Length: 108
Image 1: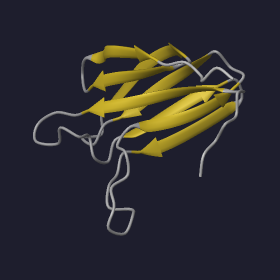
Image 2 (image 1 turned 90 degrees about the horizontal axis):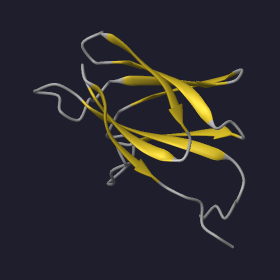
Image 3 (image 1 turned 135 degrees about the vertical axis):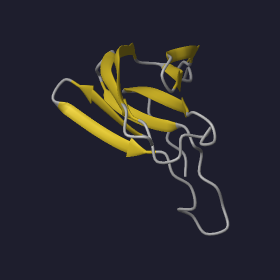
Image 4 (image 1 turned 180 degrees about the vertical axis):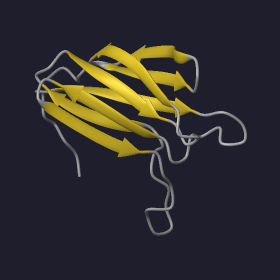
């Protein structure tokens, strides 16, 4: 399957937890753009004989920014704040955003 859509924006979140849970398994991110709110949990083992990417991907339509909040596996809530669409944000537990990698849509 391939999506060749040229519309819509997105935000990707790579969550890094505290030792010993460096992959932040069980962390839940909530992304709100306008009146749309989505949540996803970092998890593994959801596919038979395969591994899903640990990065959380959120489509936010035509919105250019979204509010992000993370509930870490230890129960702590972190208000990340408003993030711009079109980037992968690496968030480290207790430190917030530590890296931003911008991406662009393919040109057709």
